Image 1: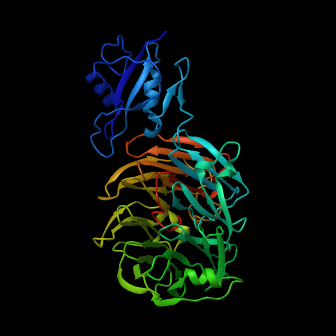
Image 2 (image 1 turned 120 degrees about the vertical axis):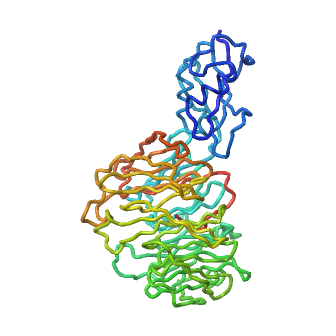
Image 3 (image 1 turned 60 degrees about the horizontal axis):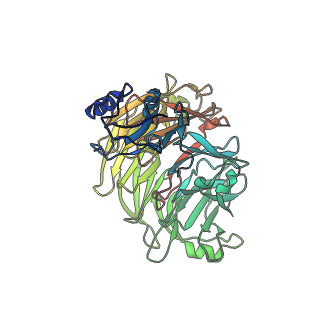
Length: 518
């Protein structure tokens, strides 16, 4: 019969195995070697499940501190196995019956989930980042990649299925190995091809704009609106506005929610009552709202701040701002980019009150994408101040926000990398080389033509980042809070051509947060 020991260890900020050893030695044991007696700690019998101890962590980014119970015949490789795991996985480990293999506790509650879409292969799947296991894979759906995935809170999300002409509302935490489609709560008819989607701050009303699809010219003027909490169940209505590729947000106003459209060529901001759309939107009537013109003609990238009722639009002129709390959008002072290039994609972080973008210089020359200049740009909404930092040449398609940082995946013929910058200071924390893609963009050709890219997502509660390897069916996980940490590679059933799409969801999140699909 084996004797059980408690081993207390911890990893301080940017800690290592040596930190663990020193802490354990402080308790009277060298964590790198098996203990020879149990006098240094209270002996226990019973559960071998790892659990948190009360050790001081020493800072907001410190790693979890664990209290492990192990047998006297314990294979000491277990500790190094635990230390190599993501922090959330360390807190949920057990040994199997012969104490020789690391196992995950299958009965635990999933707290975070990675949504993986392969729009080219017509699939959407789910990965539990704690176990690195696929929990479901749904065939026959085509995520509208440009519109992205919209978190709704409590682990739920919404996205547009361009194959089925529907808005999908799902809870990935409900998926099972035998019934992955159990994650889908609702399929509501909307106009396609989906270009953008957004919701109101409460997550009840969702607006979906349409794009070009396979056409080179604007043709669709349809806007769909969905009420997810109608008394008789979710339903949608469609109206006609103006053809193009409009951006959209759903603004909260004293007179009720409004769909605010960002038109292009010519630029304009238009605000339409959601109540009017839901009341009049049978048989796709034309419905127009209050319009402000004299906006940049090449708008691309939108964000909405519910706290101030401000719409932010990225155009060739700079960051254009509008008060959208009334029936007609009111222009506010515009902010120039203050660095070379312009933004094509905006992210809003309501917790830190930040807008984040990557400014691209040279985007008008797509075949010279390897020489594009890139600058990280962060705007403090309340202070009305901006900072920037150079990111290097190449293509940075999108980026992700961790608990305290900004992660960007850079593609370049000389080698791809993942770079991480502190969200407050913009100081670089670290960079990781990424395995090359066989069908990566080529010099002298547009990066969108027959080329794979990389999707990126991050945990908003820690420093873990996921990035795809397009064309290879791989998703890399990396703890960016520990410089030099190794990539953890997960294989998925489909190749992820074009890079696929990622979203990182957290069950404990109570609301949408950023109300625009990403």
